[in-house]
Image 1: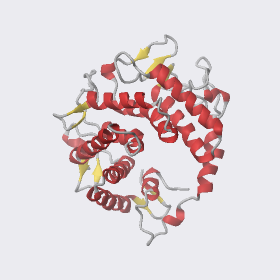
Image 2 (image 1 turned 45 degrees about the vertical axis):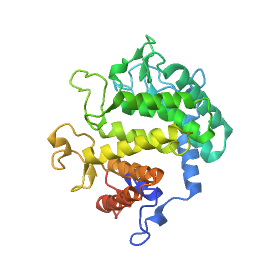
Image 3 (image 1 turned 180 degrees about the vertical axis):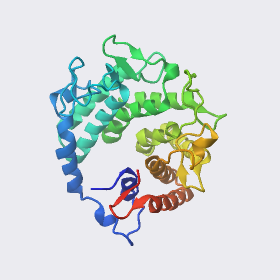
Image 4 (image 1 turned 90 degrees about the horizontal axis):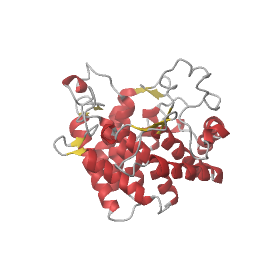
Length: 333
């Protein structure tokens, strides 16, 4: 399976034509996906150390064999890696692992994964939700047991990925007890970070050193859609459904007007200086461009906007044609 991220996004949403190179014939079967999950991914996430103590408190960093990290005698290649050796418990991996167990149950029907997912949801709601200031904590120092950073210095991308660990379980089970926290988070992020003067989401609530609060980052808009809005907008009850659908329209409009280049047919990841959106001076992110077309297509479908769907599909095909490496069946990185 040589397809990279961008190619998979377009393949699984049916955007590729059947003629020409046999793209569709390269898609793995359902059995291949399940085998990949069962044989290559789940062994790492099924060890006792992966499940946390107590169950659901999934650790952020483990060794390649799945064992717990000994900070005094770290395993290779973690030894010498300052970031991985930071004694922190992080929201994003905690939430993603919770989501992963939900996907594992969805694909296999094995109730163990459902129970592990529910344990993760309980920990996220009990420990990571900031019930005083709103939003969620991003990390805890395992030595001091102190949560950080302050609410002013949390970015919406990490908050969105924190929400993923509740959004997919609700999508999967419709557990109504989780919905109030989901809605509280969704409304907090939008109310706190949407900046009408920017016509987009801002990055922080307050500037921190060289990081300006009003930075324009594609992921501040994009990752709201792929972490929870696409999952939840079609299924939550009113008035939340209309709120989420409207929010999707605002985010897509912002992404296209600020980060998209019609000439280059690319989404740039930042838009804070002229060189950020100059193809000759900044990096080209094939994966996030692919995901942006993918999410805008979903936004069009969910909102009944046929023009947006057609625009997304047409430009996604152009993007893939430009980045596809026919000799080895993958896209450029």
